[in-house]
Length: 312
Image 1: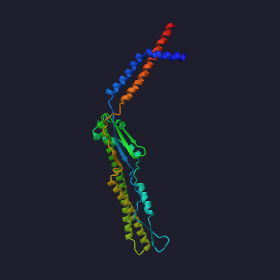
Image 2: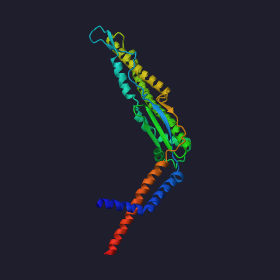
Image 3: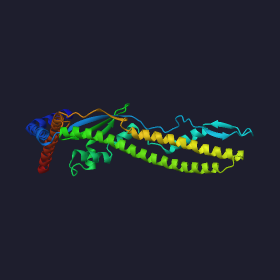
Image 4: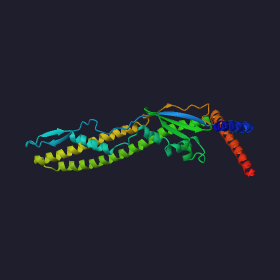
């Protein structure tokens, strides 16, 4: 019975304050509508899609024709045997030195918003550097990878739909240029390293050649030993030259051009993504209803407790 009376009292309070509830709810809806339609500027999104692949060059042993000539330790007649084991060992050693950084899809994703890429974009599009600081600019860019693919999406939010599309495309182009430039710098460092090794090897070859020329051919054992030493040094240089030539090919190919491709350029959006007018109005209606109910029940409670205090 008490629950029925309480429910009845609840309904009576709502009916008593119905105008207040309606007014507060309508006011909330109107405010949300005014803000959504006339105050809050619409925000647009433009998306560019990239396809990336791991094209890290492998500098491993790829079939040198050089061989290392070694003395036959099983015979005393001074005959020679040949082996390419040392070639491969040396090739793998050079490969560990002349190594590129592995680039995965997630690595590429993190590099899209590299400060250099963002600065190049700001400069290229002549954006206001005071408004487009690195932190603010980065917050407007959303970079995501599509699951189980090698695709990366670059989404830019802007008040101007045309500018959003221009920024998305510019970031994609500058990102690709940044990767190519970085890989070329890495290649130049590797070329410089292998050139130093080749120069050092040439110095050793020159010394070994002079030593061989000064050896008396009549001393067969010493002469063959010096000849073998010279052959080893030349074979080692040949392997180094293979690496050097390969790096030159890598540089000429502009590593990164083939590994990053724009599969979908940004389209100028015709509809804003925010504010969501219908959703804002619906939320305002619910909040307005809740607030109005709280107000009327609090007012009724305050009124009833005040009467009890006066009666005392």
